[in-house]
Length: 204
Image (cartoon, rainbow, N blue to C red; front, side, top):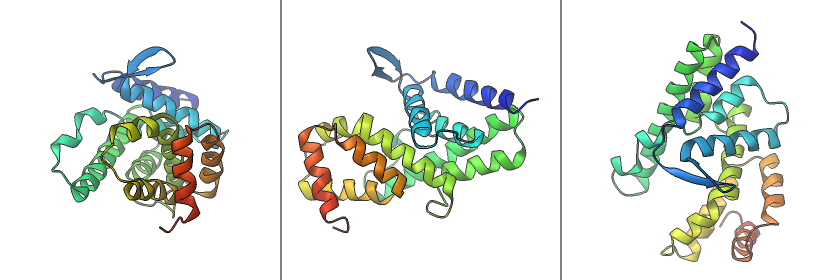
């Protein structure tokens, strides 16, 4: 079995799983299952940041939110602590599902384990692959979801928004920062002003 065959098998399996998402997102005038659309955004930004990504990173980015709708935020209590518990539980679930699919598609066991570790983000900052995944995820958020999120959270005060932007920035590498600043040039003025204010004092 060639290297390309397991990769194509895994990506197709992840796509098939995510196309079952009952939620929808509009992309270029077309309605797509939400997590399938998200996985395509992740893949596109992966190739923007890393022109020749490894097979495991292609799988990890495609599986970043695999079947996330099966573990909704509403399954966990309100509050910041529960929110992080939910995020961690999602990461473990995504990692397990990606590893299962990779094993079924013929990837070596060590590669399956690596992708599971990457998706849990336990080694952020210490592991280059995990950092790349985080950079990609941050770019997708800034490009596709930041503006809508801002409009939905009208009850957030300015300081809370500054903390959100600084937290996002703090997760990213220098490569991610450069891409984010370039992307910011096309942001709506109020979001660009928020970004500039946050980065003027990144420590808050």
